[in-house]
Length: 321
Image (tube, rainbow, N blue to C red):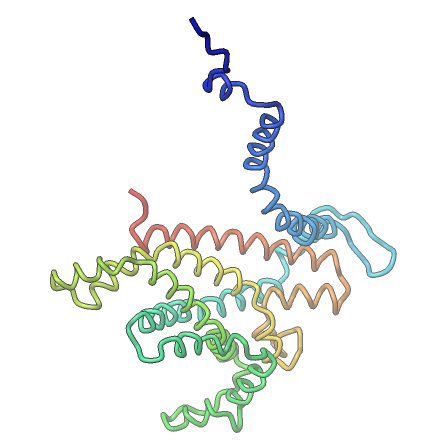
């Protein structure tokens, strides 16, 4: 009887060559390690240019740090001084005032604009890209134009208001007027940008939902409030947090509106926390105190971003059940 001495196919598959084994292990290692290698450049750069400066700024805030040579450790003395500093709290009030006046209308206008751009329009790509034009315009040019618009004697704003019986407003000398002027600069620049983010979120909502709602007799307004806004909740949260961070770091617009003066006017009527930080660090050369202001701003941004997150999660879509 003939005997087949050839190796079984099952046995040959069960015993792979040694080379194939290390290649399989290398492939598994690649699958596990590669994602971390891909994202590592961001975290390395953040560690170098973000986390290290943040920690170093805190260390400087614990000192009376002079520009040349002398560094005296004072502990939390800069922070205790900050809590009783009237100029600091004035800057805080100005910052939050301009943040509220600018951000709330900005987000509502951006949401309305995104909803309009989400409809079928002729040359819709042109309209969608057109809302980004203010963003690519030089901030200095924007400040020059708006400074002329809000001029006391010959500004367009006062010229329009006089038709309604309103006397001339000194926009740069009055606190509330300065808040409104700076806020319109911010809104003009960033509303279109936020609208495109909202539009991207709206584009991800299935059209079947709107068609079903229309069949059930829902109007456009009902579709917007009962379909668009609840499903847009993550995007609204993202835009709100980003706008909060940008609004509390407001610097360029009020600085240029006051012709480059870091004090925000003779009465500090439009000085923000960021401007006050720069004034102490680079005008008065009090680096320790300026670093303490920077850390207080950092803590305020964390706090209000968390409040924004909780409010939007609770009210925009009803929250998680």
